[in-house]
Length: 344
Image 1: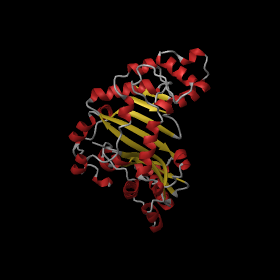
Image 2: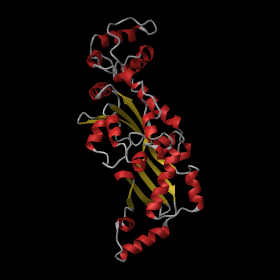
Image 3: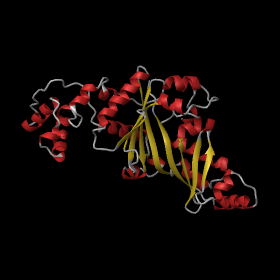
Image 4: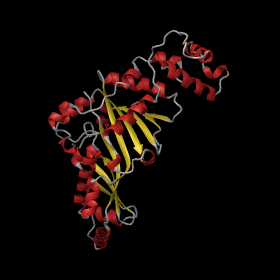
């Protein structure tokens, strides 16, 4: 059953809080010190704001105390978990801003409040999340292992941690992809014991494969997404689907070479060499030539020659089929239990 959501977001809220800042600094200087006054008096101006069941938001005062920069996992801050959530951005942003301002005792002006409600809040980061429900946890591990074998041959920066988390372009200021089994993360960072329906959430995670697409400010700006109001549920779905498609994943389907009449003789020769297990770099092709031929072959028969045939044959799960089966929507049981009701 589908479970898709928005996770970490970074927003910038118009909020003139100069007088509030001066008040906190006066308190700090007169020995009325606490975490808020200390943060307000520091050079970084960063404040940790508590959310639901141990979650936190990092809030920073910026532009001479005229803006608040808020970064947090939206569902975790509001509900204490980020397994079930919402793909609707505006309601979550409005609720988060209200909770942050209430905790800090900052009052927005009528115009500032209207800007938040109208979605005139700058969007600097948004994480789009999709889940694949597997047969068991072993299948989660197999998918991650086989996916790793394929994407290591992409012309992109990849990294992995303890064979449990796989990244593509992790440190990019544009966008990055992350793959992992949710059960392993929940075991590493346990849910709060008081969290409602904790047992159900943990059971649901046991065979859950998670895909996270992090979209940063440069990417969003290039797509014409400057404010929260510019974002739509369908935008996130389309971008995530495109990212998975662009990975050029393959399944172990073309066991024997067959001449492809819709391709020229040279691409057919290259395909035959690939299928025979030949290292294509060892037969005189430049990287540029191989890239062009790979594109031709990929568009004609959906085979990625950048992934060695030996690696494709090692695959014991249909990676491409599974990844392309990604669906979006809410989990009915979680809806019935009201787990993410506050996010709607």
